[in-house]
Length: 152
Image (cartoon, rainbow, N blue to C red):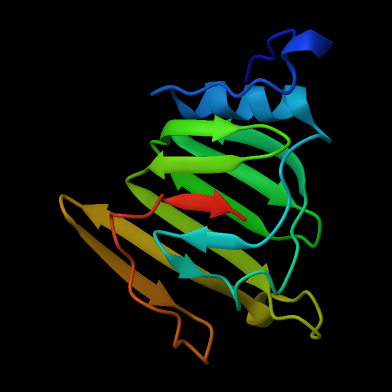
């Protein structure tokens, strides 16, 4: 992954674009720690209740076409083919992706493989499939009218 130099005057300017995972990861890396934090929402499906929790980005990298974003409590966000994005201190939006996985350890339990939970969204044309390994899964229905990933 390449790291592009950024000047302080450019750090808070959003960079939109239909670019690859490596460009998004490098942009996030340049901005750290000044990246929007908050509650995550995937195609309109909230992780938890709206504004009920706060997640902080600690690093980002690219694995091929997949953007991998690490958060403060060992949570991991994976976004394949991220497009049409804006990330800065005030906004974190990825409007389009082919697949999104959000992984977290069941809160209040040890960080062991059995407690690793996930949401998985796969976009195929105008349809989005959604699966969750978390037992209480009354999360909502994903919609293309909402961004693939947004931090509120």
